[in-house]
Image (cartoon, rainbow, N blue to C red):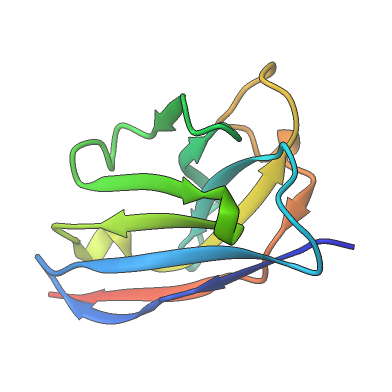
Length: 125
């Protein structure tokens, strides 16, 4: 069974950058689209960005537009999340998740059926 594994989290100062990776373990992404969500302490999980399986369409939350960029390399079964101009409000556990198809609401966690364990991102002021 395919599992998703996140990496690349850490501690960074405000204004800095991090690149997260989401890798498929035990198989491939197949035709799954991949999304990133994040959850800060005491808050609900929120949508960050998603990319279709061919990479032709991306969806960004308004809060990260212009600062974050998602990309994927299906040959490496890896999706990347480049995060620039980080702010303390970006501090959260970041999860990648997989979903099939193109319909539904891309920002809804209910559309995603495969989840990773998460990686912590902490942005200090």
